[in-house]
Amino acid sequence: MAKKGGTQDVTTRLREAITSGRFQPNERLIETELAGLLATNRANVRTALAQLEQEGLVVHEANRGARVRLVSHEDAIEITQARGALETFVAGLAAARATPTDHAGLRDLVEKMRAAVETGDLIAYSKINGLLHAEILRIAEHRTTAKLLANLNSQVVRFQYRSILLPGRSRRSLAEHEEIVAAICAGDVEAAQRSMSAHLRAAAEALRAR
Amino acid sequence: MAKKGGTQDVTTRLREAITSGRFQPNERLIETELAGLLATNRANVRTALAQLEQEGLVVHEANRGARVRLVSHEDAIEITQARGALETFVAGLAAARATPTDHAGLRDLVEKMRAAVETGDLIAYSKINGLLHAEILRIAEHRTTAKLLANLNSQVVRFQYRSILLPGRSRRSLAEHEEIVAAICAGDVEAAQRSMSAHLRAAAEALRAR
DNA sequence: CGGCTTGACATTGTCAACAATCATTTCAAC
DNA sequence: GTTGAAATGATTGTTGACAATGTCAAGCCG
Image 1: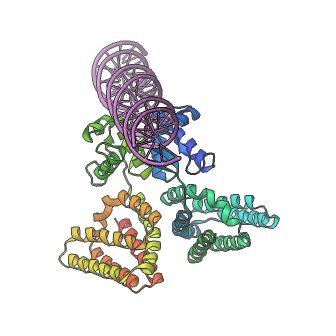
Image 2: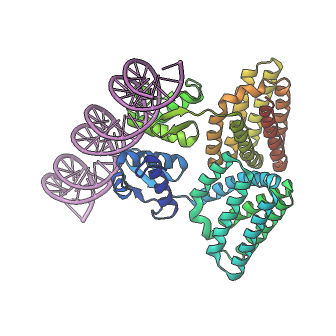
Image 3: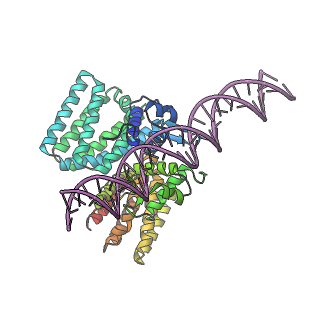
């Protein structure tokens, strides 16, 4: 296991703190402060900040320190588009590789999604949405893309809820997911790609509509 | 300008040293050694290594230090596939955005490419190939994807030459590029995506065929 | 002869002190 | 009252020392 105050652990915890919103966008990240908070030293905080900067979660100005990156609206749209390109590819892989067990898992998730929409529990919906995309990613078994998508996702978690709150969006989003899962379960690579591509185009459009 | 021994500069120079092959894959990257070589201190080397690890150029084991990442054959194929997904998207954008001036630039590059193939200068071909993809990326104006592609490319520069040396590959690659440029110049988004996708599928296939 | 401990060496990990830089306040001059 | 310079405080950047860990070879025991 990663040692308690080790660099790796510090990076992980700091990433978690940022993505979970415990630090606000644009908030200053003061090295000594973080060192105290995470029970470690400035050196470890420093390398953690360097990694998270590369990851796009933190911005750093010389002699002025680090801040939580403020992801602009335009940024969020760009990120969603890039996600779209990668997830489309991944959906195709998943359609080709998925086993009957995988199919059952996907159908189960879509069922839960439908239930969340019908009870109007959009928090639960967002959560299952994340699980579904993660499951497709797992089925595809493509480490390179998985890492890229993890990074991109961590940059836009903050926007997750905003778009789903648009009137009618959740119902349409559900339909899109049903189509994606149906295509994957049918082993139809082209259809899986088409529907996933459409899904993320719609998601980007929903972001734009604000 | 970035200060001489500053962290940012150190990261840049170390990245350059790795991608240009001055350090071999799997070669140990010893902190004090690098500090001397780059005329800086261990702390800066340390953060540079942390960033390059995140970037996929370096691997780091606790208490054992850093090494140049050895990109396996399978890794290279995966990376090429991920590139394919992103470049396909970018090609579509470029087709939608390119101006007449851009068209002229692209046609010029393809012409130079053809010349390189006909004189059998495959080194020049690889170089122009890189320029062409960079130009398409510039036309698309999509920072998020640009950064992702820069990272992915830096991981596979080592494989650039290997695949183009396959008999007949250069000629087919030229044809693919001509098709891509034609589609972009025609403003045909779908065709640009189709041809770019096919191009990188072929490139991945060429890698696999070794 | 082979496996195991021991010790020396090389390297990374941690830490604290100091220097450099930036932001903010104070205060005098006009 | 406003402007601008100097002092102050907070924070980052740099450096060196020390501790912890891993590596390797030599020597010891079975």
